[in-house]
Length: 197
Image (cartoon, rainbow, N blue to C red; front, top):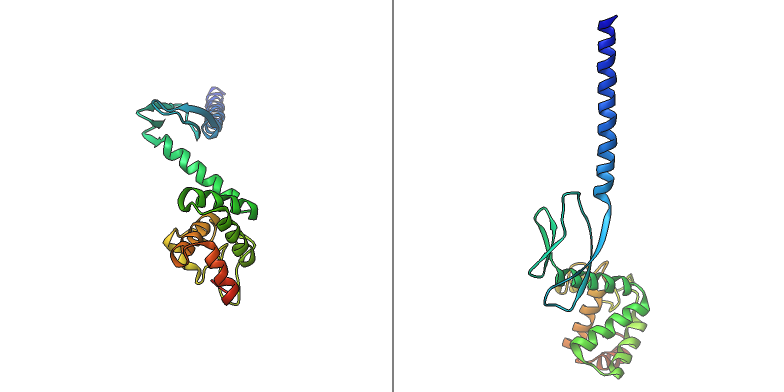
């Protein structure tokens, strides 16, 4: 009877230990997958960056020389993180026609400094070409995207994500107009005269 009792006790102890380990592991995993948001002010810099990263219980969030360390040797420059965040917001915004026009206005203002008349010509040009739809595709000609690039892979000169990134399409289209015509109004005049630009 004692022998059976010891074997039973070992089984109960083993099952109890396995159950406790399972509970502990699930709590630890749940904790590790939780995202914590924290604002980080970078020394000698006026920018405040919002950081959201999964942290393990042993990870620490520290700032040293403008770099944010997420523990375990991972580090990211705060200004780079802010730039990536801005670019991600631009991509989401540009997936709608009005948002794409806003992004184009921003790019024109910071890079090309065209007048409001040129912006109006660009709005008319791409409104007629694609209705500012980044998923637009002309099955007859193969023209693709907001600027209706033909062939579409010409946009690789800006970035290879042109199929899903409307900002890449806008950057390519503005660059194309600048190099080929100088201004959107000249490209629009060509469109009216020849049916393409």
